[in-house]
Image 1 (cartoon, helix red, strand yellow):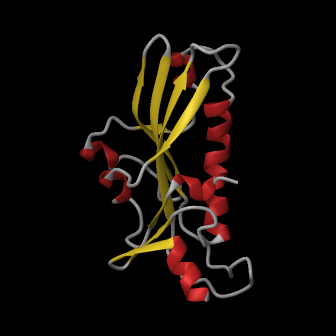
Image 2 (cartoon, helix red, strand yellow):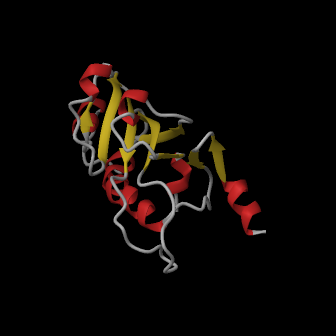
Length: 170
């Protein structure tokens, strides 16, 4: 029964583990590490302190990436962090793609007190489009991505696991 629950909520691709849905079975420590980056970003994405697409994008925390594979190596996300890419805007809309890495999991027991046996870190990515035609606040919608840019993933530990954006909802 327990094995079935794990298989139903994770995907095994070769030796890699992926987490999807809620509940996903992701380790609570790694979940909180991602949330420590994502929560402040989400506040800015969904309740922006500014009006206008350009100002909106300028207030988002995280490193900016131009999409060039060689420039990805410049990011220092070994301890976790946010990288924003595919950034664009018009008079009425703003678009940004988000990559979040948890950083390495500390060598501590799981929330249930057991020895941890899983990926050393996790990462996620998604797109956000904000519509500034609505008043008084812009409306932002998130699109879950099924994979993240390879040059960013390659900066992480070899056993880093993908976790779909909905894993961190709730």
